[in-house]
Amino acid sequence: MYNTVSWSNILLKVASFFVVLSIVGLILDAVFMVLFFGAIFLLLRTYWQLRKLEKWLYRSKKMTPPTAQGTWGYVYDGIYHLQRRHRRKQKELSRMVKRFREGSEALPDATVVLDNEGSITWCNKLARIELGLRWPQDSGRRIDNLIRHPKFIAFFHSNNYNQPVEVASPLNIQKIFEYRIVPYGEEHLLLIARDITGVTQLEQMRRDFVANVSHELRTPLTVINGYLEMLPDNGEIPKEFLSRAVSEMGSQSKRMRTLIEELLVLSRIEANAEGVFDKIVDVPKVLETIESEAKALNKEKQHKITFDIDSELRVYGSESELRSAFSNLIFNAIHYTKAPGKIVVSWKIENCQAKFSVIDNGEGIPSLHLSRLTERFYRVDKARSIKTGGSGLGLAIVKHVLAHHNSKLDIQSKVNVGSEFSFELSDEIIASAKPDALMETN
Ligand code: ADP
Image (cartoon, rainbow, N blue to C red; front, side):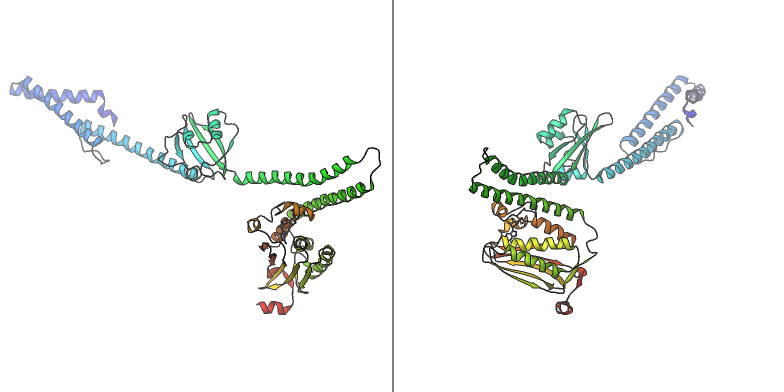
């Protein structure tokens, strides 16, 4: 096909054209004139074809070329062929780009493609949502003009991207992002920002926990140590001092023991998530034991404590865990109610569920503390809580126990009126109850 526009072909065509013209010229006896007009005609025809070509290439919206004969026909066909190949390649490329973009949009991290100057070439949807980039308005803008945190700017200009950097989100300082920069291709950078707020919070909680435990243990140890240092060197210990020191050291070591025991209970409960509903817990019997312990604890304050217990209401669950939850709530009511107060403990069916509640007319809790009460070591009044021997872990234990039993703690409280701590266990885990109790509420 391409042979047709080869040099020999062109020469042959031009030569035959001029031979024909020369013959015509000889016949008309005007060889030069005919050759001259022939050459003009050839030139005009070539320009006319060029103009047609230019019109098709730049002004026509048609893909198919204009019809032409001979060499020009081949030229048009060639261009048409090239154009189609180009379009096919373009389509393939845009399909690839589309697939790449869809893939990047599906990434769980904010992703930004930068050129070697640090200007944005492309960013995914998460980058728009989490980093506040606008697309396409921010295309070509430098990333360090848009993420202005000094830590990020220092990292970006360090040219050492081996270690990621943790920086607060430009839109929400509560959110922490881990920025990574990966150079790729010859002169592109991929910026990946991952939301690590949850991980940071967990790490913070772990640090707080260790700090809290150390602090809680350090205080009683300091007291004990203080008394030991105050002991006279000559061994003559005044009787008065000795009795005060022994009693104080005793209560501080008791405080440490309680704390450690409760920490162990908490970690045991956290670790044990399975097999909670294997056994039936005789709750009335458990509450009977707690009632006698509560009486002993109540000797000094002499609150009026009433136990209103459905003697047949048992549930499936973990006896040691439920015992811990019941006793924590009842003993707290005794501790945080001024003498002589009123406390009502009840365990019965309510709305088909087994409901446990402890109501007191104690000091109550300001509402701003309510949502945080079940956090470890959270206390409304730290000094008072320590005086009562509280470790600050009681309600955290209750929360975990209830989570194991698919329930949660409800706290209602009014300052100087009293509090109600209650929870409900679903009818699914009720093992036995007075049939009429279930009937009534049904
Ligand atoms: P603690 O060992 O300090 O008692 P808890 O986790 O059992 O720790 O309780 C957390 C805090 O909740 C207590 O320090 C106390 O301030 C408050 N609290 C708990 N129960 C009551 C209650 N019945 N009345 C008033 N405040 C309470």
